[in-house]
Length: 100
Image (cartoon, rainbow, N blue to C red; front, top):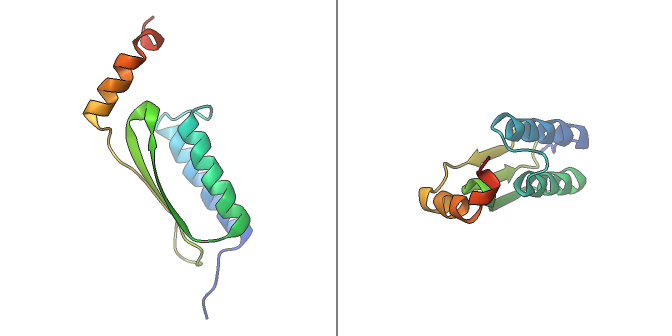
């Protein structure tokens, strides 16, 4: 018989993912952090297995977020290295924001 994650298990796992985002320097105020949190909140609420692929624009990094519904399978969040061209485009467009 297949066992599914409880809401409490999903909350605990979601918090761990969000902590990792903060550890790698993605702020809670960043749109990419908020997007990830929105996906996690929906997963916590419904419990449905989902996979999301999106881009953290500010960091020019792609994300693959895999949220399983079955107990015993951990969620995964792949944060791919920045695309150098996209990163350069972002920095050029926001040069005045990064200068002191």
